[in-house]
Length: 343
Image 1 (cartoon, helix red, strand yellow):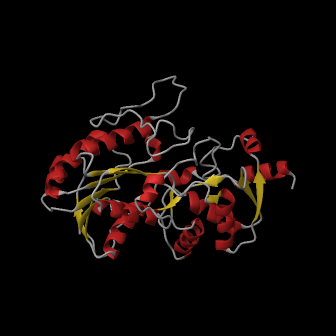
Image 2 (cartoon, one colour):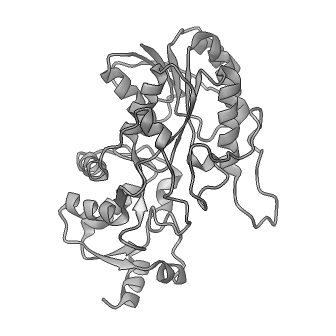
Image 3 (cartoon, one colour):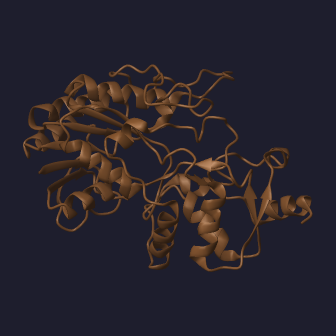
C-alpha cells in the first residue's frame, strides 16, 4: 500500500503515519514543516495545501492507494475541495477526518451516524457560518466549516471513494489540546481533587491510535461512507477516567465529587475548566454502530491514560497549541468549591 498523509507530524496525523509504517506500507507525508517531524521511515514532501502550485507538485509524487487527511481542522471547505480535486487523479480513495461537531444536534441531542449534518457548501470560504453581531443562538461556525469540508471531499471523490470519519474527543500520547494531561497533572499533585458531576456519567473519548487504525482500515476497504469514531456508549464513566488518572500517577489524590448545579453556581466553564465535563444531554450519547460493524475497536480508557502518563514521564512534549492554555481550573477556585462541599 502507498498512502499519503496530509499532516503526519503530530498527534493523530503522526499516529496514522506510524501505524501505516508499522503495517509495512509506503508512507508519504505532506505538510509545511512547522510542527513536529514525521516518523522515521516516512517520506516527507514540504508544501502548503492552500497554494495551488504546491498541490500540483505534490500530485506529481503520486500515485497513492489512499489519502488520509488529518490536517484540515482550521481549513476552509474550498481549500479542502481544491486539494481533493488536485489529488483525485492520483489517489484511489480519500479518508477525511471530520468531527461530531458537524452534526446539527451536537452536543444537545443523542446522535447516530444518520443524524442531520449542518449546512455548509463544499466551496465555502473561511467566513461561512460566522456569527453575526448580537447572535445569541448556537455557535455552529466550526461545525458548518467541517460539514462543508466533508461535502468537498465527497464532491471530489464521490460517495464510493470518500470516507468521512467523525471522532468526538481524541486522547492519547501526543495530545496537544491538554485535556488528559491536565487531569493527570492534577492527580499527580494529590490531595482532595475536585471531580465533576456524577461519577457514573458515561463518557466516550477515543484513543488517537484507534482512530488511526480505523482510518487505515477504511483506506483499503472497498466502500465509502461516514462513521462516528467514539467509544461505545456506557462502556466507561467519568469515574473510570479520573480513577485511572489517580492510579497511573500513583499519587494520594482523593476524588471529591461535586454535583453539576454546584459547579454551575460557581461559574465553572464547561468542557475546559474541568476538562470533559459538560451538562448537555447529547455530548456523550453518540452511537457508533456502523463504525463498530466496519471494524472500529476502542482500547480500554485506562490503557490510554497509562500510556499518556508514560509519554509525559518519558519527556514527551506536545506541539505548542493555544488550546492547551484553555484547560484547567485554578487551585484557588478549586479550593473554594471543595470548601463549599464541606467534606
